[in-house]
Each structure stands twice: as C-alpha cells, then as structure tokens.
Length: 356
Image 1 (cartoon, rainbow, N blue to C red):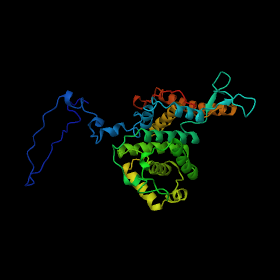
Image 2 (tube, one colour; image 1 turned 135 degrees about the horizontal axis):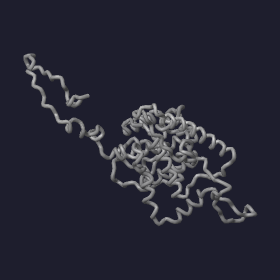
Image 3 (tube, rainbow, N blue to C red; image 1 turned 180 degrees about the horizontal axis):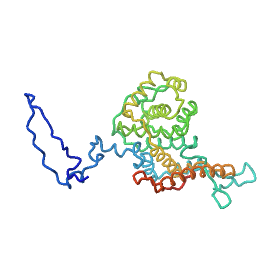
Image 4 (spheres, rainbow, N blue to C red; image 1 turned 90 degrees about the horizontal axis):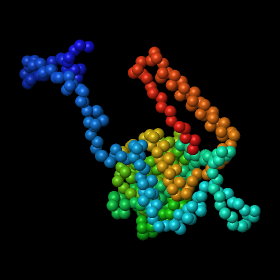
C-alpha cells in the first residue's frame, strides 16, 4: 500500500551467469519516479505491428468500413443510362396494384404506403432475410463489381479462370473476357445453385462477404472470365460454414454436370488459402452487409415485397418485444443493485427495435 516503488519495476535482483557460471555482483537498479512507472504506457493495441494497413479497413472484417459493392454501385448512379434504369424499375417495382376493370387493358400503377389504419411491412429481417430478393440483391452487387472493376490492373489467378477450368463442355469463346455478363445471367447462375443445394438467404449474404474478402486479400478483380468460379467457390465455402447440414463437393458435381470432384476440391483449397483461412464472419459485419444490400435495392428500385401487418403477425411481434423487455428488465435490475460492486456494474443501453 505505502510502497513507493511501482509494480512494474522488479524488486528482486536479476542474476546472470558468466562464462565460468559465477554470479555477478548485484547492483540495485535506480528507483523510477512515480510519473514514469506506467502512467504513460502505450496500449497494447497501439504497439502491435500491423502487417498490412489496408487489412484494418477491410469491409469483410471490420463493421465500420464501407462495403465495396455499395461504393461501386454509387459510382454508376450518375451514368446516363435511363433506359436500363426504367427497365429495371418496371421489372422490380415494389408491390404495385393495377387499377383496372379489365385484365387485358393497360392500367396506371399505384404504390401502397403505410397509414394510421394499415402498416405495410416486408417479411425480410436481418435474422431471416427473404431468399428470392436477397439473391437478387447479391447478384446485383456482383454485377456492379464486374462492371466497375479496375481493367488490367490486377493479377489473374488460374484456378478461377474459366478458360483453364471450364464449368461445362461447351467451348469458351476467345473474347469471353471482353463481354460483361448481365444481371439476369448472374441471378440465374446463383439462383440455380441455391435452389438445387437448398441453401438459405443468410448463406447468400455470407457468400458476398467471402467474395469481397477474397478480392481484398488476393488483390484481384472479378470479371467476365472468372466470376462464375469465384462465386461458386464463395457459395461452396459459405454453405459449409453457415449451414449445419453442408452440401458436399460431390453434390455440386450433380448440379454442374461437367465439373469434377478434384476440381471442386482444388477450388476450395485455393480459395481458403487466399482467404488466409479467415472464415469468421462477425455478427456486426453480417448486419452491415444486410443493410447495405437493402440500401442497394432501394437505390435500384429493387425493393422487398410489402405485406399488410396482420393481427397474427402483430401479436407475434408483441410477444417477442415483451420477451425481450422482460430479459433486459432483469439485467437492468441486476445492474442497479446497491450491494453489487462497482467493478461488476453493467450499463444497459436501450436501442430502438428494427422490425424490418
């Protein structure tokens, strides 16, 4: 208690042996002042050596870093392409109703908005996303990755090159890498794999996380010549990490008839090596990708389908809210007990619930 020597300074003599195994005479170390005994010690996180400064801002690892697909999609907003946007808007506009007496006559379209008597909610949440529209959003994100890539600026890895490792027996055109795939083509490829393997919507979000992690770690770009094999490898890895009953590599050979098990094994092995075996997806990163996909869908008029809030769904939401209220009420009571030590005091912070 009253000792003036800091705990960081050793009070026992330091003994060293010379070449003849004799003890050197002990010389006491000078006593350090109190201001220099730990008050200005650098935190261990500041002393750690970071091998690559860019890894700290990797969006697939850190929740505060912005996702790559969202930034690339924003660069395409100002492009003068009204016909494409109007076509996409007409195909994916959200929950529209036809005001017409006849089914064969053209009719104006009207959006549905929430009011005091009716509340419209979509059935997609961060814990249970809508499968169909999540796959559409992920396909759109991959489309922007390919469209706004850095041309001829990064290396190409052979395992992802479809010319060297084709997925079908049909001959790949010589100018295959010069034609960007359309969003519908990407969507059909991803939807086929998810439907045949019976994968979940959460797996689609993890697939996008692994895809951007691969592009960052390996310093490559996704393009027309490698996008199928990169997406296939990300889906293969995400299904094994996320789903309890993972799809085997031989099962993908049943979906893609012309691919071999050895090719799938090599694709998985090199994908893991390029990821540096980092397959962890924190909940904060998963939630960031989910909400960024929703922002991408709203920016491209690809909104999730709305449904009126029914009585049964409202009762379920109320029951869930009551259960969470009771849970945090017990934590709040335990944190405010006067007999509890201040060291064990936990501050409960309330946040508004997100219904959709």
